[in-house]
Image 1 (cartoon, rainbow, N blue to C red):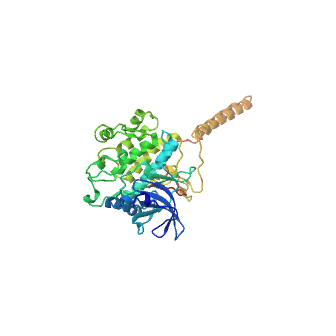
Image 2 (cartoon, one colour):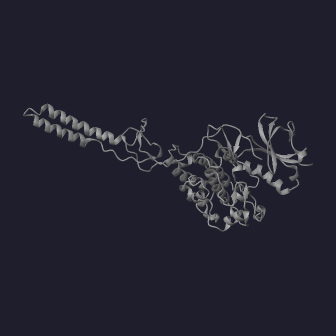
Image 3 (tube, rainbow, N blue to C red):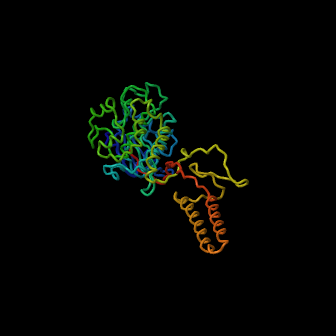
Length: 430
């Protein structure tokens, strides 16, 4: 059956239970439709393989693998796969995913960035969730191998931070598979985002995904590709290969200046970026978990000076101090967030500006001196006035000496937050 004749139409029934409503998108391997599950009435994303690939066993296996691996990873940041199989009537593989509503990161960059990057806070939100998704995948021994802005989907309304969904595990690999099953002599992926070892016969590790995340971070913050060989829609493969394997890679902030967007990539992230794109996989972050932990630390240094008031994620809440709490006997004490001093239970410490302590000390001194002057003027004419004045000056000195000593304030550590979960659906990429 020819490819055009294989296109599904509204009303077609797939696998005897998915009623096609409309087409969403189409890619190289297959097409995605909105369909209604007739048993539950739930709308889903139905992905079917192009008929001209059905005879290719390797492509068939990748299509089926997307369903298997996606279902193995428990993460809110990976698209959920409900069902998969072969449609008997048409003889084509299909898989059924949650229906998403939103846009890819690539589309958002094109729509909002307009040639520049996203705000650092938004870039962090996307990258943090991506790292969480990879931590879950890598913990199951799964390497995605094709991370790129087109495979990252943003779910949620414009008014709320979107939730990231990682798509397309079609070429992902199980690390537990034997070497012969990994097709190590075949380069699979997208050249702009592929780690050097994906073009060689080396064993793949989670570090291959780490490489891609570093390049995605550069793209998010600057709106540009890191590679000199990529200019707009043109890709100079010879220049790209040279950068991948031979020339020294400059820090990301330096490359941003070379591309005319010097202020878009903070130098505070250079160290994190360099560990992502180390040519030796053993020198990169080991996996998504360590990558995400370092990301949060690095971005905290970027966002805090910008006045970003955030709360710590569950994974970044500082541990409780080991020293005992000091307080009034019989009054329970509780610790405040970020390691601030303990306060009696039920009392909420008020947030006050730094300068309030100096002003209160000055007020105490001025009040004492004013009292002394007043007493001196009213009693200075009497013989006893001298004694009274002396007492007043002494009393004022005692007041000043008794004024509490206020220690210097230190600002608490600021941890960058995880995003609140979204509520919404999105459109799925093929």
